[in-house]
Length: 184
Image 1: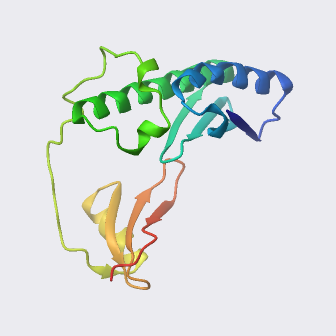
Image 2: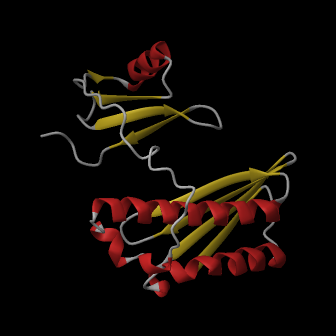
């Protein structure tokens, strides 16, 4: 695995870097082609809270964990545990659908233990909703989102006819996710 370790408001010492790399080697057993897997770790400090963000870039899908903790090293452990939990959840979904899709090229599913705690009820779609996407500006989309009291709102961007989703960011402000391909 290739590592990129970044510090924000904190200096990444040799100890932090070594601890991250040693603990991330726990994940190596899950990947078929270890040399092609890239991992970006961002550690940051905000007052008394340490934040650890780990993103593992698989060929067809990134897997990401974000943890905040008062202790940086405990946060690293929790983030690794979270990533392993996500791997088990992906395996459970793939097994249930009898379809490994394109993830089968990157993840060694035989190395992932079944987790008793993965609830099958959580993965059941309990509601499906569809609606006509109206062309609007981002300001109008934010206004509608806030009026509905939702954390996100999907709309058709009037400037470039792309499906867009505006959402409220945890750290404040808004974010926009936009489809790369315009509607024809």
